[in-house]
Length: 286
Image 1 (cartoon, rainbow, N blue to C red):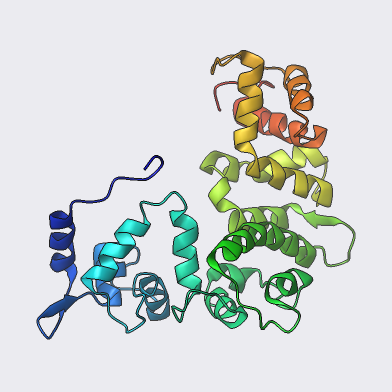
Image 2: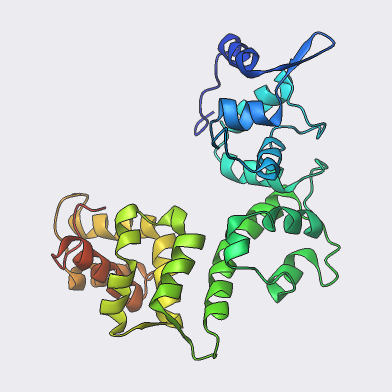
């Protein structure tokens, strides 16, 4: 259907599976966790890897949870990757450690505690946010659709949690270095390398000192989450032209007409453009 990636040729898929499968049981070939994660996907260094990480990643494909990956499981995973919501489906299978089609609080914690992110910025597992999804006694289990919403909201909540932890005296401000660590740890998937390398510079110019306020922090995150909206506003101003320079006033006028961006978000956008391109205009960076 529309929006779906084309499935791989079955003959080619079987050939790939057999090339990497090293276990033979009763005439049937299987991949080990190492076969799949290290040899096939090449996600980790084969000389220096964490065995728990390998098992965790392989369990996404090993839906029977027997420690081995069969060809039907490998084929099903290839099919899953063709869905438009493949990222959410893959994440759900990562957290559904017992393979029962639901995610419990204990499963969520088990996986999170093995992540580098949780080690750097521990998340409060007793927070009201967690209770809203898993219940006050944390006995509620979450379906795929609910978990996809939870993951979406969790990224935002995690950023706020990071701010709270860094704001040790409750002033509503955090240091520039704390801002950089939170953004690169929690929101790195939304940051280009260029923006990552200019985070402190952009925040310094905007905040006029060595601290970042909570409103700036929220607006910065909101801007990152809404770059598709930024593109639509830009193209609305330029009538579809992608290389035309747009002033802050022109952009603001269009943004307010669409009533979906705050003045602070627009300020941050143009400050980033100025830091990256020294023009003071939004143009073909889009």
